[in-house]
Image (tube, rainbow, N blue to C red; front, side, top):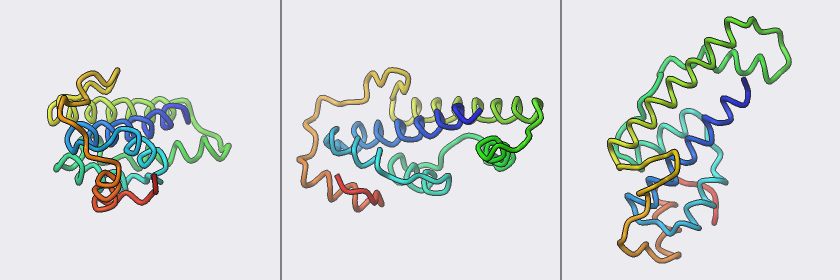
Amino acid sequence: MAYTFLRIEMLWNRCLYGGLVKLHRAEAGIARRVVDKQHLTREGFQKLFNVVYGAAPDGKEDFKKAETIRDRVIHGKDVEPADLRYAIGEAIDHATALIAQVQTIAGLNLGDMRGYKTKIEPLDRRTTKWVLKGMGFAARA
């Protein structure tokens, strides 16, 4: 269960990284480090996704029940099997909608990241750092 939500957080990182490199021509190494170091909450991800892609992320808006179930699992509380199934289903629905949206907006295949890098030269390292900072990414590269 917790693994499923960890994978969602990894998907969020991949979405942000791919968008930065493909749409904004960020230097890949710096973009990877900054996204990996960024502390992401659900609200923080939605804000950064909107900045990177120019649209609010698709997916389940009513994710609170699934997050509550996840928190109970993480903290060792008793969880009914039906609740686990519900939370995993919500996570899969969220991931499916997000992957489809990124494919539509940017043409990114998040499975193997084919087509995420353009043939246009990326920004230089210093410019990439300033662009990422201006977009709201907090971590330093």
